[in-house]
Amino acid sequence: MNRNLIKLVLISLLAITVISTSAFAQPQSRPNGPYVEAEQGNVSLSSIMTNEELYDKLHQLRDRSKGVMKLDIAGYSNAINFPDLTEPLGYPLYVCKFGEPGPSKVRLFITTQIHGNEPLGTEAVVEIMQRLIAGGQASKAILKNVTVWFMPRINPDGAMNQYEDQWIPKRYTDQEWIPEDIGLPAGTRAPWYYTSTGRMSTVTLGRIFTGPGYDENRDTNPNLDFRIENLDDYGLTPNEFATDYLDDSDFNNSRYGGYFVTPEARIVTSVFKELQPDVYIDIHHRGFNYLSEDDNRQVYIQVAAEVADPYDDPFTGNHYEVDPDVLTLGKQVNAVGWLSLQLGNSAFGAIQKYPKVNLPGTTLGAFALNDTAIMLIEIAGQTQTLGQKANGRLTKTATDSVLAIMEALADGSIHDVDTAIYDEIPESANRIGDPTTRDE
Image (cartoon, rainbow, N blue to C red; front, side, top):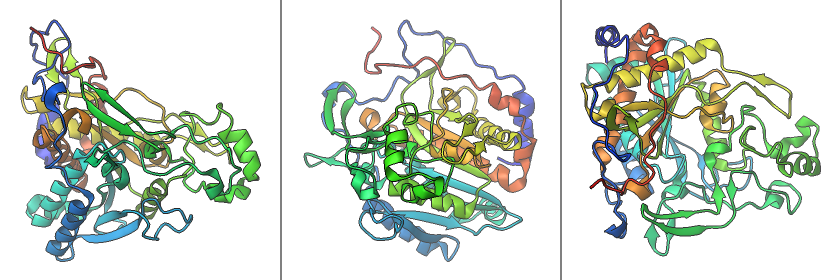
């Protein structure tokens, strides 16, 4: 989206309006689906890339790019020899680098699939990288003015989870909590975002397998240098840390940062520190909503520029908060994403804000507290609720919005966007709890 188009849309959208439609008697959306039905049986994932297919694709893109894209391995999943994360014990975590940081270039960092059962962000960024490599005026302008690094699947173990010879992606990573392995006393309580026992449940929306493992998106800390093996830097012994922090529910909860116990969280943070991005976009999935009581379009994405409150680090006493200028840029980034999808009354324009949260242990929260503007993109549905259904439609919402943001960053028009556009995006509401229920 170029400068003139943004200005045109800004003028026409000073107040966000919606076209009223008749609300259904029950909370259903338009379009009403598609969803995995109870009688469907196994969920098809044949159009979703496996790890091997993704890695092959990344190497193909690198070779086709003729030097435009550099492909690095930042570390490996399941690496247990902290602090060395380069031993190939698990899957590689790739970084696709379009340019190097420079004083005259905007720095953009994009990650996807931090939860293994949220695959469409990966599909979207592969499409974006293909477009950047293909060339064209817009792509050339982006690459001239923006350094963009992608990490297109940062939970490869969860993405490829197998259960009873079936491919069933799961939210969590694939490590087991063994405190002795990281120098803590046996019996130390696990971080609150760890699940110790796997469980299989059969529900109307498909089969879900979780654990054992960590929610990787709670394992980051605003203190990007915190490491359990360096507790003496904070005047703590392993026993004191176990007793005063992990064993104490007043500290071991979502209001505090994570503990960097997963190699994946450490690897992503190391890339963040190397790039020092101006903007960070993280693409997820979530449940289903319809837009409002007057507009029953299905919400394709939710977005957010704010996910963490001011934070005081219990280990160092350092205070973190989001800089006002950083928040302004974050709102402008999110607003451009919203503007890019306002195509009349189409389904693509049905966008809400993500619910207000305070999660300093997420990558978005921790990075925002370290002076980076953020955008959360939450695509409707997950593999257990969609399988590969609506892949193209839902992927397009992320692809188009991210490309528009890149163009606005490249030509500087991002700074002309009124933050009121973001403020007026409808709040999260109208959750559809059982989308397989149909009105008669």
